[in-house]
Image 1: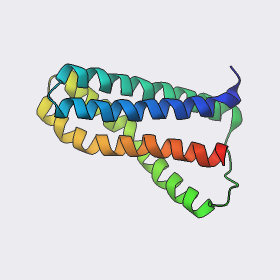
Image 2 (image 1 turned 90 degrees about the vertical axis):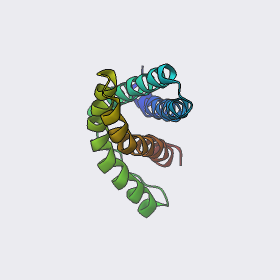
Image 3 (image 1 turned 180 degrees about the vertical axis):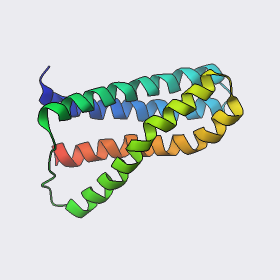
Length: 135
């Protein structure tokens, strides 16, 4: 695989993670714990695959500068994305760990924080990709 195709792979993984997160959230709202568990673990795996692919790409390519017409908008999205993306792995690991250990009350408390941040980071990751590589 050509390393220059990895941004598209990354955007696809972010999209998959977003869809799985939303689907998993809807499942738990319906009371389907097993479906929720499976969807969220799949989202976690998609995010891990994204992170590995992202690191491989940037190891080989380095930083990519946005040259498009919406630079202030891009930088604003990128800033919030990067700050929150640094927090998501820690939050996701704690959230998944608590669920797997059956500590559902503490899981629900942190999931209320983790979920919107994780969704935001996944969605803005796709937006950054579209602005950086498709505009």
